[in-house]
Figure 1 (cartoon, rainbow, N blue to C red):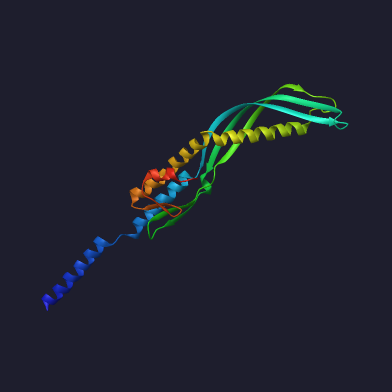
Figure 2: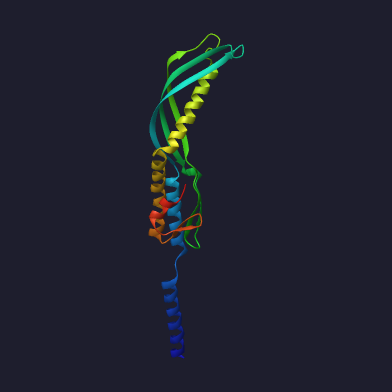
Length: 202
């Protein structure tokens, strides 16, 4: 009888030790999840890259008077100095945390936003009393300047510099998830190397 009870006690002890060794406490996963959420909160900010652009803009406008018999012209030389910023608002980043599979999946990253603050100086303004400068002309000049600057910005390295800053922020997710034994995905792509983040279009 003693041997039987000893056998049962030994079996229960072995089972408890086995469970203790193989059981991964839920609290560990919860703590890891909380750390990742905290990192997401810290990174959820405006990532801004700034630059300056200068441009000389010629504005000309002709107005026909009495058909083609008479033309009234106006023109101006505009020197533009603009402060430009490119930002990623990471508060708009969407993600999914799956504690069961220990996976952080980044679902979408907001597109960059370009802000242009031009300082316009007007030189050599010439107009005619039949075609004088009006508020509409200044508005058209500003629209044309912004369109020209936007085109130059998209061709410049300012956008790629902003993307590099974005990748630097995203790499923090990879480092943290990797250290916690979690998996990082961007959309459906498994991120196994930090350099993979550079290959995606944001």
